Image (tube, rainbow, N blue to C red):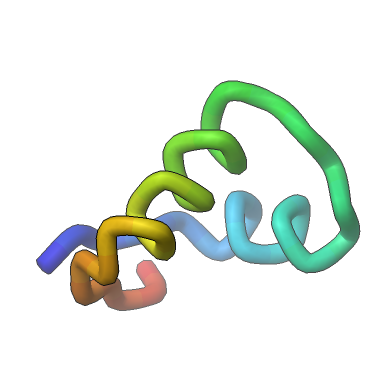
Length: 37
């Protein structure tokens, strides 16, 4: 399980693309479980 900062989730949902949201997208693609920090 990976902890994801709330700002990354907000950026991801707002279609902001940066290194952190790219990694989050990779986590989703690999179906790695995550929690919101």
